[in-house]
Image (cartoon, rainbow, N blue to C red; front, side, top):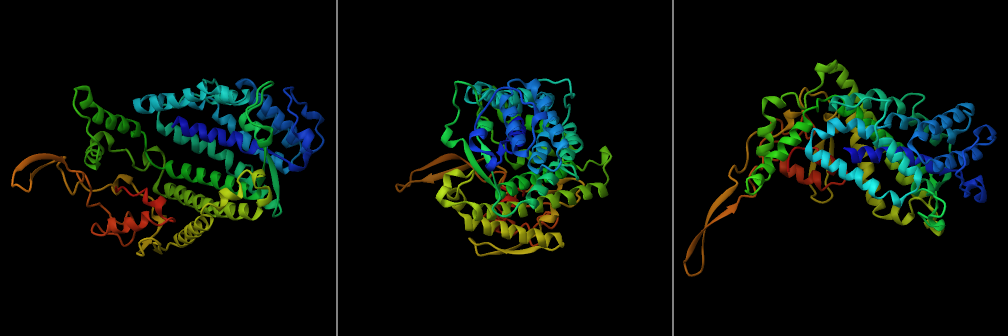
Length: 485
């Protein structure tokens, strides 16, 4: 969990802050100073962008971040006509909500031993390798990791869900949100529009130290890259509005139980047992997990409000796929192969299965457009040649308990080991014990259609449909949501 929060934080802090105008003047643009900028002297947007970049790079302590963010907001408010600066302001403002976020998550993460070890290891690696980047990135790391007086710690996963809904999402939604500002920038730019990415903001800068060669310092950011950023924000908001609806508080307890179940035999000198759907269903069937995965109707939500949240999540998800397709097509249209290495994403990288990726995204768009109209889509798998129906809107439909999608307690085999007798060519036989590797393989579900996600699925044909689903690029991600091996 810590790892992905770090990724999100650096994504917001880094990507947009790296953008600088290509036409600002190379000599002035590439001069880095550690002195504090006087924003009151700024008269042009190009100068403002240069000043903001220098301010970011000059940060050497976490306590400077809030002040720098406020400076950017103030400058943007004074010049609302400066569109790129508006984007800077919109995408740096949410960072203030992430102050101390790792420390705030600590009570939740520490309630799960395996999560705690993984989280501490990931953060410690960042600190061990501080020498790989400049001071401002170390300051950002401190900012999100160390304790803060601005916020209280989370006690439950529910607290995290509510914080994401009530504090993080509003920073991106609405007329003044980051997503809206980004969309205004995209809409106002002409085809062929580009900006410049200064890698010093991603690597850091310190007098006497080089973290990146001058030759690789600047890259061109295209309009297609902005569509990619839009897709990421839309996808993030889809996740927030989807998971807000379900009780996940016992998730940490469940992980602990699963880990103990596999490790307990090790303590007594026995082989640890692997966990299969048999053990998973046995654990989740216990009374203490009765609320896990249920809709949060006990927390003030109603079936109607949950459905409204899920509709919004679906809208964001569909929009993210549309934006991802635009990103790919716009990026390919803009890159200049003669200057390929100058681009943030080169044509060589874009050309890797370009036609396949465009085809996959267009098929996703078709599936989601049909789902918006309430219809399933007939898909023909290019590898199996089989047809199947799919309607992703079923995932975004109210369910009182998502555990209802789990398999029945019906399995192909319930014995971990088999007794076998083998006979050689001389007629000599010998008894063996062998693992039954199909132990725990489910063969029945409470609803094999998963509420209409796969309208034609039955217990008898689910694995055949799942084979095509997994081997079809446009649906392989959805296949990962189905509780089947």
